[in-house]
Image (cartoon, rainbow, N blue to C red; front, side, top):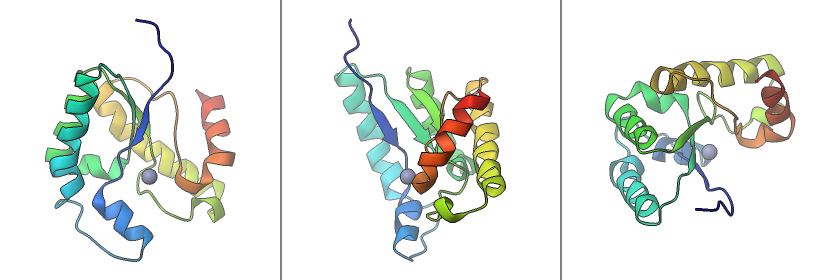
Length: 137
Ligand SMILES: [Zn+2]
């Protein structure tokens, strides 16, 4: 099959979205991962789409979320780096702190894939961070 494009999906859990609005939700109780994740994988499979999934490292600390992400990887989707904590203000954060956010997530993702991710999507800081991260690859 000829590839005509790419599909990139941010795996933002409910806690990450809520935090954007100043609300706090538990990371282990997450309706997006509980039902939406399986629906997403089913849709991708039916459409024969291999996507790049941007994973927030913090979610991999929850065993059942980790299993879902591992399943996605085993089904052929690429895992990429969406930082450790999905902070909303990374564009105004010191570069060294942002680098740690990326490195910590990288380490967690690598425990699933065994290989270095090819890219990152660092929330609002992507303009200055993706380039640096990609250059280190
Ligand atoms: Zn996100």
